[in-house]
Image (cartoon, rainbow, N blue to C red):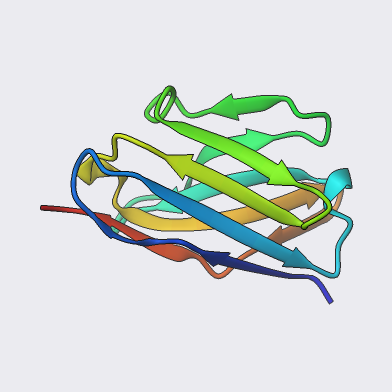
Length: 115
């Protein structure tokens, strides 16, 4: 059974940093595209960053230059380093692993950027 567990969210002041983690089990991580999404209150879920199994990354324009996605396949863990956080980054952040018809989501971790 595949499980994804996000952690690392919390309350941070504007300009601060957070590193989110997504620990996967029951899956061979190296074969999957990994992504981070976020959903703010009253808004649709949007992709923040993604990385293919080959290591190609892509970032939403709203976060480009401020976040970095990475993965440790042997540890089955995906990371999202977020710097220079802004109040508009406040959202629940979700990890997603996808490969063909296989599509798995974590339960989300809350990130709140506020002074």
